[in-house]
Image (tube, rainbow, N blue to C red):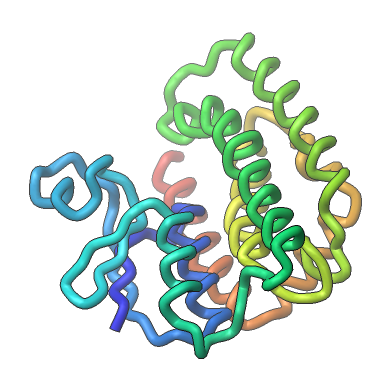
Length: 217
């Protein structure tokens, strides 16, 4: 059985969790924060989550993990299209979301959630970066009804794990968030929340974030 080590407020952990749930692959979830301890680094060399354990092996980095799962569980539902052009689109959407939306957003929400000061210039730069990335994403998403077409794909695992988190985490500093202006996003998120897997993941994330915010007051 796969053991998934991660935490419900980590979008990369949730990306892998959603992927496994949608493929209906049995797994054990072990809540684990990131760490720089030596024993942790033996399993995840950058000290990040998620990582998985399977057959005595440890795999890390969310994209590598889901690519491994797709290749090694051939009887499960395919979440990367067989058509190479469509598969490339799925991977491109994931890259835009993770590299050009989540990465810049972390410049604001990571220190913000730690109650550290955020330079005004950083907020302006992040807002601009998110506007550009959202415009790019709008050119390639389909929302028919899923983000890359008529079927749930790996891109939905990444999108649903990251986009609501970015909007929520930035709400105290960048509101409205440019990501919210992505045409079709609101209906898409409502649709995803009506599905059991995404709803389960979002409920766990929202519950912990609510508790963290209460503890900061």
